[in-house]
Length: 60
Ligand SMILES: [Zn+2]
Image (cartoon, rainbow, N blue to C red; front, side, top):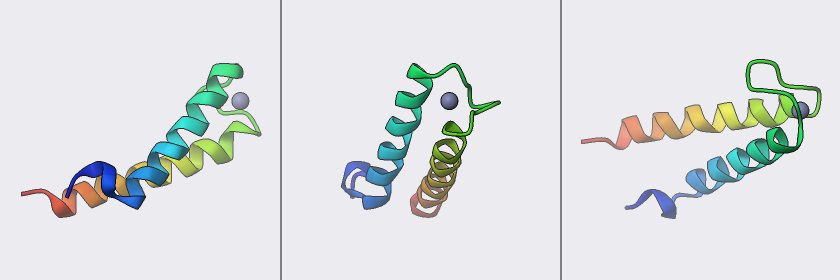
């Protein structure tokens, strides 16, 4: 199984893209996201954690 076939990875990448698109057009950062950016960053963080857990579980 490769990473790209995982629906979780797809959602993680979608959240990552939304967040990076936002920070590109906004002056906020991950350390201090604005009102619009905060939920995007939160979602990205959650999915990143879930994805990292997924990798940990499937390693070896
Ligand atoms: Zn922002």
